[in-house]
Image (cartoon, rainbow, N blue to C red; front, side, top):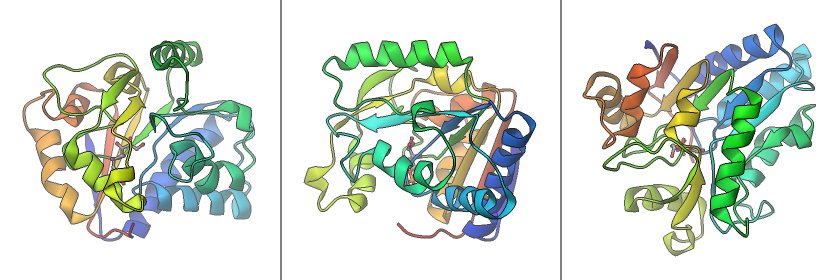
Length: 240
Ligand code: F6R
């Protein structure tokens, strides 16, 4: 793993955006694996700035996101589809029909998961997968478990994840208890992985994931087995 520590959230976000922009420029028709949550907001802001000021184009790329809350429609302000539209897609020249987020209101969630993996396979995996890390070491919504789940699946969110994400909702009671998430197979199929971990509260779980045993009890630890992982840590963080 390549590890880099930054003194600020802003400098980490600029470096993350630069890595994604390099791929976009070298391969305009690339597949970007994207994440939501507070960690990548600065990265998306910087990509938008590069689009506006430097002509960085998303016109030929495809994006595929990690996860979505089960039961939330894309029009719901806390859905991950809504987040992506707000923070990135509506601000750059991407074709919306080239952006994929699992459908949280699919009538058959298991079929949606199968279709999502088929899409990922057809795309050939992501050229770069952007990841955040949860307080329990989850990536996507792959929560600590007895074994790794390879395929996209419906997951019961851990209480710590529900609590951590309650800050985006009016109350913890409103946080969905289930989500659809890309599995570890989809994540590990990415050609390159960029994990961003802003905030000193993430340091302990990050260190354990990078240097401790590879275990499904700490899903991010599986990244130790990927040949091209970059980890950016920043002392500071911008809330939320
Ligand atoms: C989001 C995702 C999650 C988050 C993680 C960290 O798409 O897959 O794994 O990356 O929960 O969230 P933040 O960035 O809000 O600390």
